[in-house]
Image 1 (cartoon, one colour):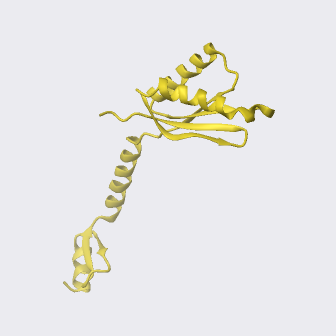
Image 2: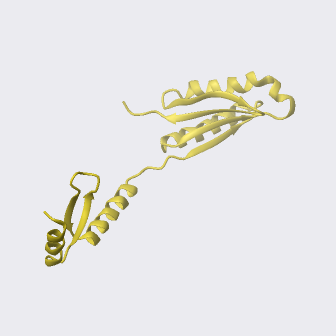
Image 3: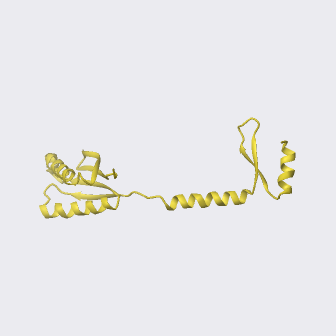
Length: 143
C-alpha cells in the first residue's frame, strides 16, 4: 500500500501509522493506537520488574584467632543468608604480622566450605588480597 493511502486510512480510523520494520524492503508499517501500545509496553515492563529477584552479597568477617562458638555463630548467619538466596562473601581479616600465617585463614575458610557444602557452592576459592582473604559462596541450585 502506498504511504499516502496508509496515512489516510489511519486518519479515517483515528489511529496512528507506526513504522515497524524500517530496514525491510519495502519498509513495514502498522496501523495502531500508539499511546495504548506504549502504555501496554510499560505495564509489561513493570510486571517483569516485579517478578524479578535481586541477589545481594552479604559479608561475614572472621579473624584468624576465632573461637569455636564465634565460628558457629557466624556460620549460622551464613546459613540464614544462603537460605534467603543471597550470595555470601566470607572474609578473614589479618592484622599486622598475622598475614604471615595466611594458612590459618585458609583453614578457616576451607572448614566453612566443608560444613556448608550441602547448601552452598563456592563461586570463588579463598584468595589472599593484601591483609584479607576472601571466598564467595552461592546458594546451591535445586536439582
